[in-house]
Image (cartoon, rainbow, N blue to C red):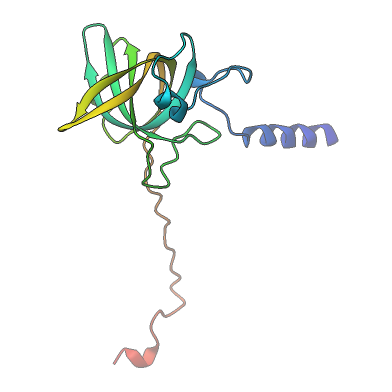
Length: 168
């Protein structure tokens, strides 16, 4: 009986641990470049990995790959973009091999991307010329959309919600 109880406690304890989704997971010993470090690099060294995330701003499908433009937000311990504030360090572009449907990967969705830091690109956001840090050979994890949870209200028929003297 004790073994069974310990097994259940251990199983529930492991379930509670946060974990990074498989497509964007790396070994603990793998160094990752932060977004701020990549912004300051003019010519990044080859093979430097980065895991960034945020909110999708635009998706462009080209002949052999898809370009995702992302508004950067810091990641929490499970690699989920922390959009708790309206502060963003900027935007970046990620090149993903193959086709990603822009109706699924639509603006506003949360995404985490793992890729190799490449040379920055200059492009426009509206009329503004912007220097984008770039991730190549990117692997992505699209987070499910969060739906607001509505708590049901239970009323008992035995309690009057307004006093009797307010009725007439």
